[in-house]
Image (tube, rainbow, N blue to C red):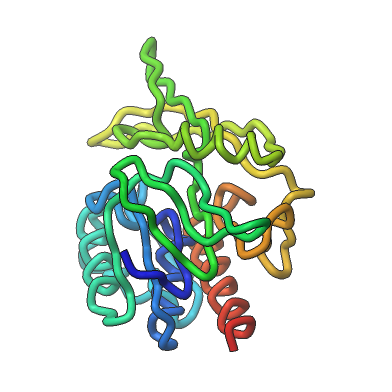
Length: 232
């Protein structure tokens, strides 16, 4: 697999937004997701206002607010970018050269390489999902968590906070709650998005701060702007 200038792990609102802006600016981006069927998939229909010029804004259609339709439009826009490679794999750990992150190992076998690596893994680090009497290892309903990546990050010394989120019941899905881990604030620099323990590693989205779809989109856009400045 080729080495990307930026490799983003996680295709939720923050990760997908960052990838889209970077690719549109001419950067070769790899966007890794555990499931192509859940790329930028909302729990509930997104509601404006949205960040101006964002992928979130472009994918929104007030005449068709179905979550699957929104997902399909967002995925189409991502796949339409020539410099963006959207692919399915499960990250299990970081690849290091000395104290610098250069990619991730995957459960499928082939490594994914990047000059910069971004973790946009949402509520999936060491996550447990609770639905009535059922408990499973998942970050969202029917979406597996990242247990191996979480254990690898802990072994590298990263510290985390315990978090919990609730998803309300909808006409088509039951309500549930998720317990997950987010990076300790002292591990992360808000202005640069860096995870300071290792060079070349960044984080964005729910794994570092809470927020709605618009805020996650704005953070992804802000990360892209920072990386464009850093990459020159």
